[in-house]
Amino acid sequence: MNNIPPQGVMFPMGSLYVGDLHPDVTEAMLYEKFSTAGQVLSLRICRDSRTKQSLGYGYVNFNSPQDAERALDTMNFDPLKGKPIRIMWCQRDPSLRKSGIGNVFIKNLDKNIDNKAMYDTFSAFGNILSCKVALDEDGYSKGYGFVHFENEEIANKAIEKVNGMLLNDKKVYVGKFIPRIEREKSLGEKAKQFTNIYVKNFGSYMSDDKFRDLFSRFGSVTSSLVVRHLDGTSKGFGFVAYEDPKSAEKAVQEMNGKEFEGRTLYVGRAQKKAERLNELRKKYEQQRMERFNKFQGEFCCFGTISSAKVMTENGRSRGFGFVCFSAPEEATKAIQEMNGKMVGSKPLYVALAQRKEARKAFLTSQYMARAQAVRQQGLQYAGSPPFLLPAVAQAPRIFGPAPALRAAPRWPALQALPRPNGSAFGLPLLNAAPFRSPVRPSSVRPHARPITGASGPTARPNSKYTTRHGPETPLVDGRLSHAAPQEQKQLLGEQLFRIVEKLHPELAGKITGMLLEIDNSELLHMIKNQESLRAKVEEAIAVLEAHKANKKGVVVQD
View: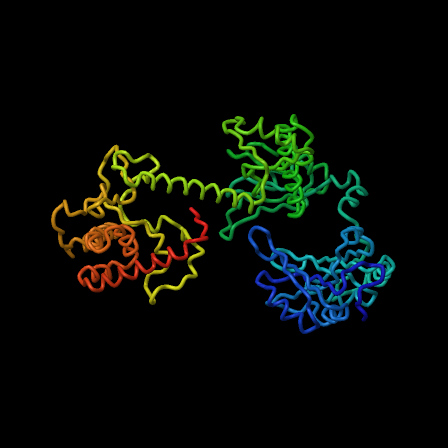
């Protein structure tokens, strides 16, 4: 059969819609599949903007309609990752999809009839724009489906020929599809009538007879059911079917909210999942509009608002939103009046909306400017006595290595640099916190950098590992075996700091912090083997030099 896009229906040349995709299907798999039919110009799988998970459908664009037709004829309903894919001509015009013209509804389908079987059955009458059997959450047929034909004439022909026929020994109904809203309008008051009610919150010891007797006083009950666990205990909810809608309505009015054995019953109309979701959706939309009106009311006094939106997640406000005014001066006035204004118990922050990239660049430039100011002030006071240093100097920190406190490297752009001489030091070690000795309480903040004088580098005021504290105390292996992991690092750090300070006094803190990333057993070996330690110290210095050489142009992130 010829499946070239029908005349009068506007499709992009050679564009196909591919649906019912397995969540694990990738663009590469689609390309490998469809490139056998012809030259593929482009393709994409539609994904959730936040989670990037597949939405189960995508588009494939071929170089020619003939290639697309070949793919549609030969690959429709082929399994991909174990799930049959559904292919149809891409319909970009929403009015065509929503018009209902040529749309046919089929019910009482055998559960074994799938998309392919229904497509094969109805394609004999003319071009099919789309075809789908409705499935439940487990992937099984719900017993009904839809076929959208090219035009009304073909749809009427299919209805005439197939309605009342036996398909897999089941008599099917085929008729024109009528949207739910139109069906409810045609039914009028009958659409509001119901005979089945849903009852919950009656506990786990409700018997079937007691449940039926509880609701039979409102009218003739055709059936009742208490839903139970495998052990026979009640799940706390059930269903009652009445012969007369008035009896069901009376039961809801009398029993909903009534106390029963210490519990408050809920009794309402029994609904299908789709109906319940639709009601929840309407309720959410109503709440959204209420939030919108409230949010808009805060700013409407400053000018004409063209749009306003509170950003939400899972139905809850994320604490920020956007207001669009018709004129720039109105927005400026709103910022001046509302920024810092107390709403409830919190002050509002109001500013001009920026794109994420622009906002990130602005914040980065602010951070760099502050960092530069701190560095300049630190250099200005580098030759001053410690007690004259300004408050902008780095505050003393509690001792101990702190690589675990930083979740990501400070200079991610440097990760691609080669490690010097196959060193065990990766560049993330540049982010290791300088090893600092315990700080003595003092009201004076010493400068973070060592102060140099004519006699060379002097010891840092907050270090207890200096020559004025006497000779070094050899590290006792027994102390390590009885210490906690963090205490072991501290003991090793104290010993390493004394040794490294003699070799490189200005970099002793930074190098020691880098060395403490190494396993404790290897550190103990290095302390006992001075040659091994010197080699590792030289590696650390090489890493630092590589960092300095590549530091230019790197954006610092904190």
